[in-house]
Amino acid sequence: MGLFITFEGIEGCGKTTQVRFAAEYLRKKGIAPVVTQEPGGTPLSDSIRRILLNRGGFRIGANAEVLLFAAARAQHVEEIILPALKDNRVVLCDRFSDATIVYQGYGRGIEIDAVRRVIDFAARSLTPDLTLLFDVPVELGLERALRRISKKKGPAPEDRFEQEGREFHRKIRQGYLDLAGQEPGRFRVLDGSRKIEEVHRDVCALIDAALKR
Image (cartoon, rainbow, N blue to C red; front, side):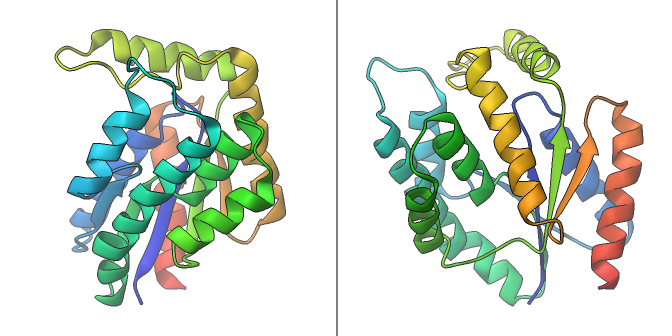
């Protein structure tokens, strides 16, 4: 099997930028990674992404939200992630199951064990080899996220979660830190408030260590 690395954190933590930089770093080392995101990665998953992340004229209940994320993940795992890992590839994924636990469990208040059962089924019990958690204060993360969204042109912005109240995002941040404390062997917590280049150096060192293992 290959190496499965996930990038997690609250809105505006810088994870998406770090995924891109990490992919470039690996390519320079002669490794062609599979770079993907959640929700997304396949035509079906991308369609579900548009429903979940764009504000529409209808309400999405918390339970329905979990199941939509799970459906997107099930297709993503089957079509993209598992085949790549079986082909001994390095997979870099922008969010995975941990995001559902914290956003829908901690954030929406759905019972955590119920969320875990759903995502375990959807992901076929797949667990990342390494999860990089980019931790930033909620205020800084939201400021970054909303600034990024304001600069985008074209289709409706993916801002449904950014429009939630700050208390929601505080629960998300705490959820991530709780998960990192529960699984210290898998998680590595990085200070995402630093300069991009500083965070990138730490990411590269952690990826190199994972490759050696």
